[in-house]
Image 1 (cartoon, rainbow, N blue to C red):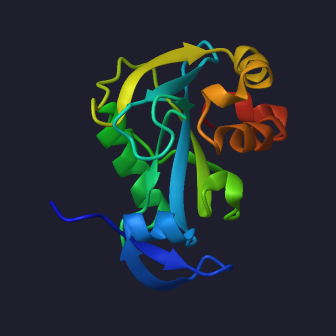
Image 2 (cartoon, rainbow, N blue to C red):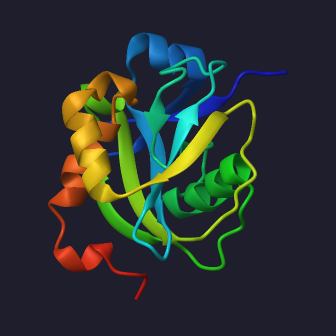
Image 3 (cartoon, rainbow, N blue to C red):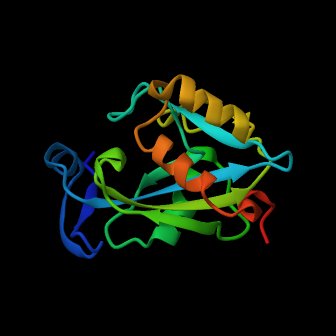
Length: 175
């Protein structure tokens, strides 16, 4: 199997080249990713515990679904693909874009668009990607991050801080 290729981007998130996954991560090259936060009707967020097979952040908790963009893929295309690949759910509509985080050390030099979707599950977790998952109330996640940030992938605390800074209506069901 050939190694994944990523678009390499500049400080303005413009594609400037293409490189193998291992080289992008080894050299800290800027690239692109998506994260989706999936809430149920009770206001709980689904978090996944990453598989121990993952090369980065194995065995820690992460957003509902996340992943890198394939070469030439848009952020919107990637969020739909990653949600289906990791959770086995084909979303009925495009998740709502919440915010974009610039590439930085906390994101592993990824420009990240964060989305919000609503779904109830059950999900079919991809075993190479996800060990397990669970539903958590936002207050529980905030307390957990404060108590044990090491339980989470590196970008989760940053994503959660941005999420909590959004207007309160963001917690409501999809408009």
